[in-house]
Amino acid sequence: MGVRWTVTWPNSIRTPRPRAASLETGLGIYEASALTRRAKGRADWLSTQRTYEYRENPAMTKSFISDDFLLESEQAKALFFDYAEKLPIIDYHCHLSPEAIVSNRSFENLTQIWLAGDHYKWRAMRTCGVSEHFITGKAEEREKFQKWAETVPKTLRNPLYHWTHLELRRPFGITDRLLGPDTAQSIWDECAAKLRTPEYSTQGLLRQMNVEVVCTTDDPVDDLSAHRRIAEAGKLKTQVLPTFRPDKAMDVADPIAFRAYATRVGEAAAMDIGSFSAFLAALDSRHAYFHAKGCRLSDHGLETVYAEDYTEQEVAAAYQQLLRGESLAQPLTLKFKSAVQRELATMDHARGWVQQLHLGALRNNNSRMMRELGPDTGFDSIGDFEVGRPLAKFLNRLDTDNRLAKTILYNLNPRDNELMATMLGNFQDGTIAGKLQLGSAWWFLDQLDGMTRQIEALSNMGILSQFVGMLTDSRSFLSYPRHEYFRRILCNILGSEMKRGLVPNDYTLVGPMVGDICYHNAKRYFGFGAA
Image (cartoon, rainbow, N blue to C red; front, side):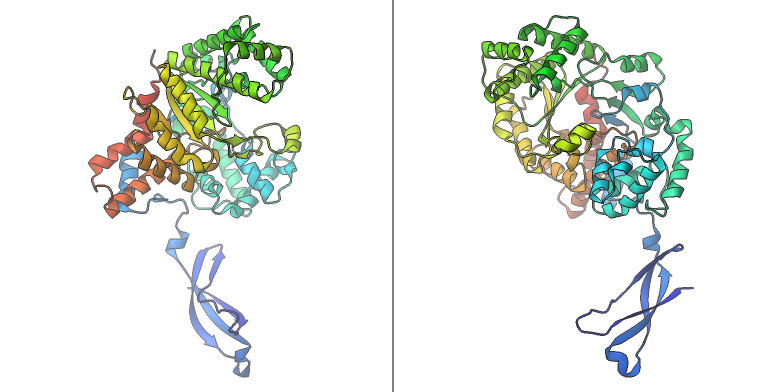
């Protein structure tokens, strides 16, 4: 039987009467159909009553994240389920802790595995009025999770809403509830029970999500002992490899900090760093050390590319100035950064690596919170730096010297999608398929609209079939459904165009392309395991 509910509203031309209503109860979500209208004599002009009967609407009680989520055509479904869903994951850029992997860390609850270190969630919570006490402060873990659960319903149309429920679906299998304040306790308890089992340790999660390769993000001074122990143990099917992230070698804003870092590079390499050429030799020694440990990628998080003209004498003098703890003038700062970036790129080419350039972040904008919490806590944004001219000059300089490595360009500002996509074609040389890549939508852009726009730009101005696909760029072991998210979006775009006749309705043509983008291109491109 239906549930009857009587609604009264003013019968005024200024107040539209509802044509339908809805009610959510513990039994499900119901839609309304008008049954009766009872007028109250002369009061009819003042108010009207209608009685509604609520009947279960099967479409509304269906799981939010269903098997067909984001797949809007039969072609999209076929592409996803037949060509993408079961492929392994190559996560060639992330911020997972290798120590957490080698120790096979287990987590006690969702706050530990899901909220700690997640500045996406922290930003949303602050925006929704949650005190810092419940975000990065000393509140109890259950209290922090409750505040997140209260925030989630307010994130509709933010990618966090999709990610949250994708991650509850996989790996936890929760599809019958949306996360909110009323379901927080049951979800907390159910997930805590699963987190106590071996399948939900760090290594268990990598196995569950079929992750074939993980590339962590590591400083050149790191001894990579965690990576060594993972390899020596030989128990984990997932390859865990380092990535060379030398940003601090170019960060000269604080000369005292730079000098301290240069000293650490020298100590790690057991080499003198008294001159600029010696500093570069020490960095190259660390580069070789990383290569021996399986590293095949560098990564650079920069505002823009640095490609100023400079002389060896200018840069050598600038380095000595830094060793004395003296700040550099802006023109000399740009020359120094340009020299270091060029030398690092040359090292990448010499060892057959892939260089990744993450461009356009305006970091640490809130100085008060930077002092209190430090970097990577949710106070960064999209920048509007000049990209085109310095990027073209940088790539051309390397190409002219025949020292341009395989390169992936990531833009944080969506205005640069087409700029980057067209830049690739200037330096493709036919030696390697997709030698230059437009990186997957990154950070603020790794959501439905951002991924779609990146795919459209690459399709229109590059060659989508050569794309190396998705990465997580995450600190969380629960982020692997982002690969599923990307695969669903890709399949929906291609499936829609198959349905509309914009590409052939031929699975033998389109299906392998999906498989290449989701897995095979990356496996070929990076050459993990090669000598």
